[in-house]
Every structure is written in structure tokens, then in C-alpha cells.
Image (cartoon, rainbow, N blue to C red; front, side, top):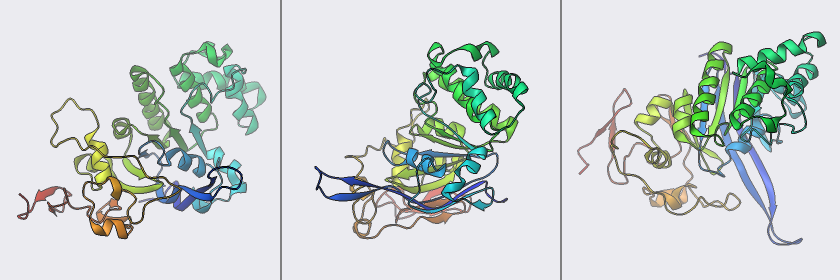
Length: 341
């Protein structure tokens, strides 16, 4: 395996929150709490989890849009400091969730796309117009769109402009933060296929963030599942789909709509995610976990490799239920043991 394009090691991002009025108690919100991930050239790493689990904060911290509390960020083999953010953004860009608020409302599209070209001095001034029109064509827009203002375009067209702006500096990594969640389903499909085509053409790597596991499965080579600021499972997409190890992942998978007959019951989680400013002891998922045992309330599970290429933070990752263990075959499939019903 070649060296990762992006490598995150034990990344933390904490916020201070004051309860009540001026002299209220200050508590620490661990929005990102020790995340370790890597992405290779041409790979899409999906990041999925419920709203509020820290996905967007992780994306912004990776690009130094938020200052990390601690941890290490390596890009193209080099450890980056916060004062090197400009160098990082030359090779890594972000596509935001809202294609309207992320574009300057009073700037024409040609100026929005020309700005990164001029700031980074990527093309001579007399070639900027040609490059802008080429970017618009790359994302499936007519060159005539360059004279429009953002409000004159549809939501899908605006998101295409956002993608074109990200591609203007010829990055190797694009962070897509809920990039299709605000779009109609038919437009979502167009944007997702566009992202795949651009990846194949330019060998782009994506950190693809969404709460929609179905979309993440379609886009990703590997999927990381996040809960309360931590990664609780990481696996190749097809293996995660066939057999999720963490009970939280199983609940997410059971909620994905499918035209095929379900192989198991829908898993419904009770309650809401815990307060990240006051997480529960032990495993942060144990208050909602159908498999929770006494050890889960006392010891925080380590994120470790249970199978080749499969890591999970669960004391009982190789069990299908709290009372039905499974035997693990060498090809990663599960088989019921004699202790089952």
C-alpha cells in the first residue's frame, strides 16, 4: 500500500461551552475526540453518522477551517501546522452542504471561479476566462452560466458551481460535506455521478460526508462510522454492507431503504445521542445499545482490528446479538455457532 495522501492521527477538537449566564459552569464539548483516519490517492472514504456526531467539525478541522485542539494532520507525506493552511488548501478543497450560502450572492459565476485562479496564480490573466469556461463545461454547465448570479441558478446548478470552484486549483483531495443532502433525489444522482466521473478523470480522493448511508455506500471504497466524536467502525464498503461489526452500524444499516427483502429485523435505537459535553462512562453508545453488558458501562472499548481491514470499537464486535456468538471464517463471513438458538 502506498503512503496515504491524507493521514489524521489522534485528532481532537474541543469547544468550551458555558451553561447558564455569565458565571455559569464551563464544560468541554469533545466534538472530535481522538480520530485516526487515512485516505489514499483516488480513494473515496465515506464518513457517516447521525446529525451532531462531529462529521462536519472533523471536515473543517482537517482543512484548518477550525483550529485542532491536538493531534496530527499529514498531507502528501508531510505533517502540517496551522500556519501552513494555505499550502494545504492548494491541494485540498471543500464542497459545502448549502450551495446557496456557500457562494457570494453578489458575485457573478465567472468571478467566483476566477478568484482561486488569480489568488494562487495558476494561469496568466489573459487565460482566466478560458479556464473559467472550461471548468463550467467540466461540471456539466453551459459556458453562458458565467454571467449569472448564484440566485439565478437552480440548486443543482449552484452545487455544480461549488464543485467547479473546488476543482479550480486542481486539488488532489476534495472534502464533500453533505454535498447533496439539500438537493432533490434526481439532482442528487446527477451530482453523485458527476463526482465519480471527475474522480476517474483527475484521480481525486474524496472524504465524502453524509448522514445518508445509502448515498455513502454508492460513493465510497471504505466507510468510517462516527458516533459522539469518535470512529466506532471502519471497513471496506462491501464488507461493511455484508456484515457490520458495531451495533450502531447495524442499526444504521437496518434503516437504509431497500427494494430487496430484509434479512433481519429493523433495529430501532431508543433515546437520543448523549451530550458530548457530558458523555457517559465506558462505551458512549451503551445507553442505546441493545447488546450492552456491564463491561460496556465501565470500560471504553478500544478501536482495534477484529478482522483483516476491519476495525471496530466494541467489546462484542464478533457477536450478532447479546446472546448469539458467531464463528469467524477466514473470508470474513459469519456462521452461527452451536451456542445459538
